[in-house]
Amino acid sequence: MPGYCYKLPMITDPVSPDADAAVAIMKKGWNLPTAWDFDAANGITGTFWDKRCAASHHLPCNLSDTHLILSLNASDIVHADVSLEGRRQYFGGMKRGSWMLVASGSAPDAVTSGAFSLLHVYIPIRLLRDACNAYDLGGIIPEKVAYLHGTNSGHPVVKHAADLIAAHAGQDRLRRLQIDTSCQSMVTEILRAFDAPTDQVDRLSLTPWQRARLEEYLKEEFCNDIDLAQLADVAGLSKYHFLRAFKSSFQRTPMAEVTERRLSHAADHLRENRLSITQIALKCGFSDHSHFSATFKRRFGVTPSRYRRMDQ
Image 1 (cartoon, rainbow, N blue to C red):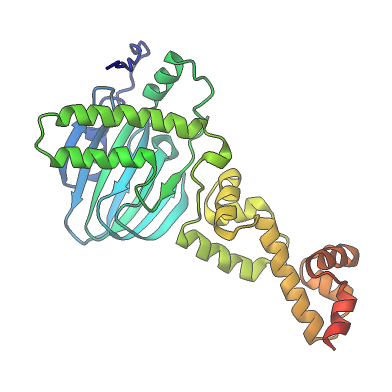
Image 2 (image 1 turned 90 degrees about the vertical axis):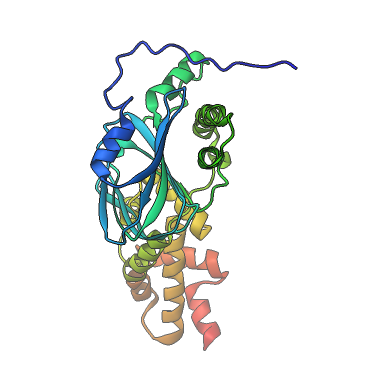
């Protein structure tokens, strides 16, 4: 049977102290018990956190910009408050099987409550770059790695992380080979995710906390001037990734959602009071009578004046 060998190039660049000591650095920062560690032949390392106490705990990241960190929850987490670069990304409980992939350079920080079991996988960014160089895959790795997350282990990268837990639990003498194979496959799948066209990448969705916060913000502010940057800031995401997550969660763009709320509010005014069309337009966030009338007709098929008469 024909075989293959995936041979990574020799690493000639100076290695950051973080690169080969990620587990030790994180253990010092988190100061929590762990059940086991692993290190693969390609340089990927990791640890399995096993927090037994219910007290809240601060979980900083003391790594510099050397790694991607994959977190896979092996148990429910009662509550987690997660931030990147000082901006809140998640607030609430986490289910077993949920996961996130972040860059260590984005200053991930969390406060958790309750006991939990969690696998951390530390993937050296230099490993990804060396693989790209060896196989002429320039341009795949983005300048800034996005915050990726999910609620199950169906993503190929996460499946390989789950295989690491299974490998440790087993007593098979091939366990070491399974760890190395899973970590090698993880490199391929991460690069595949970076290289996939936008419509083929797993769609990001807003977390329940992000959606609830946006719903509250839109309810209060939809009649005022709102732009994409403001909404992205409320969700704690970059504009690009917020747009994708919002469309996945709401099935429309952010500004289409704002317009829909304005039109619905305007329709209520047309039915319920005698404000002029211009007054309603300005009250509901439209720039002028003409803009409001054209937008209203596209949505309802009639002009605001006609809509008002129909309801009388």
